[in-house]
Image (tube, rainbow, N blue to C red):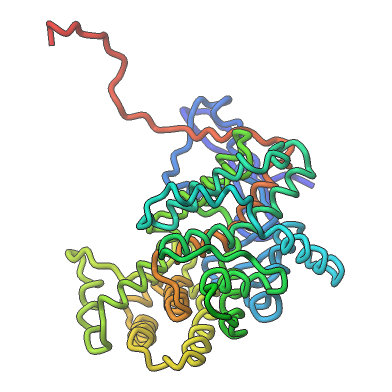
Amino acid sequence: MTKKTATLNLHGKDYDLPVLEPTIGPEVIDIRKLYGEADVFTFDPGFTSTAACESTITYIDGDKGELLYRGYPIEQLADKSSYLETCYLLLYGDLPTGNQLKDFVQRVTMHTMVHEQMHYLYRGFRRDAHPMATLVGVVGAMSAFYHDSLDINDPWQREVAAIRLIAKLPTLAAMAYKYSIGQPFVYPRNDLTYAANFLHMCFSVPAEPYKVDPVLSKAMDLIFLLHADHEQNASTSTVRLAGSSGANPFACIAAGIACLWGPAHGGANQAALEMLRQIGTVDRIPEFVARAKDKNDPFRLMGFGHRVYKNFDPRAKVMKETADNVLGLLGIENNETLRVAKELERIALEDPYFVEKKLYPNVDFYSGIILEAIGFPTSMFTPIFALSRTVGWISQWKEMIGEKNQKIGRPRQLYVGPQKRDYIDLRHR
């Protein structure tokens, strides 16, 4: 079989570059030897056209609006699977058998408690600290408590670290929330599902019993599942870059959480909800749509469009149905914010301006509405995203560690600063 090549002509010389073929998706030009052979770099700000790794985990087709976890469409997983089953799929490559799933759920459940001394870490933060600031600190500090899972060259220790992170992130996030509102920490319960346990740790108090509604638990599980992984996004790339230096898994995940904190990434659902509140009522929508079209107005419609998806975000369809179910259960289906969201979505899908620019609603558009309806403040939206994405980060990290040709990340640059110049003595300046 003849291998494909792409020819680059530079300064009158041809360079044949191998063309790599994926199982699905665009072909990739291999430029690894280009610098050594031609003494040139490539320039790609944001790495929008650069494949930084090989991966078998997640695939996105932005033009089709398609998201696959290990080949399985996200719509099928959202309809038939659960978050922990999806975690198994992402970690190990295939859907589990009944016994494998039972064992995996048991292992995660038995690791949900955190070291008791970690409670003292929270007291070092101000009460009004953002939960993400707290989460970055306590996840990074896990390496000070779990010394038996820091050796990245030991497959078993990597496995233990993965289970611990998936199991303990909901506990740590719930503790961050409880600390921020001045309530006592709630210990995890082994008789509850993953999502129900998280809701219990966030909303129960010692003074009275708390029963998790199955509709809310299902909605929470779906939010976790839909955010579990999303290919080589900014936070995942951060985890891989940190991991390429040989950093321990807890430090790598803390780095991912820090990156996720950015409003252009994990904070997008909070921004979308705040925008809907700013609009306020349905009758004000035309005003804000006009502002969004005005090039001289800095206002942007949050929750529309996506860096990758140039079609409808497949996660948004599932999230919209979930929003209807949750708000219906809570008796707030006539909520003004939801009315604004639905009308804004209708206009955006019909307005030629938005259709032409492919500004379709994304997953962040409805997830904030659901989380607020459940009872979470906007400050908790990103920590929930972080605990959802932990399994994706860990899966990507484990995959990277197992690569035969794994190297420390070292992007190049297009230097446009001063050329070499001589130092001028202070008295002559």
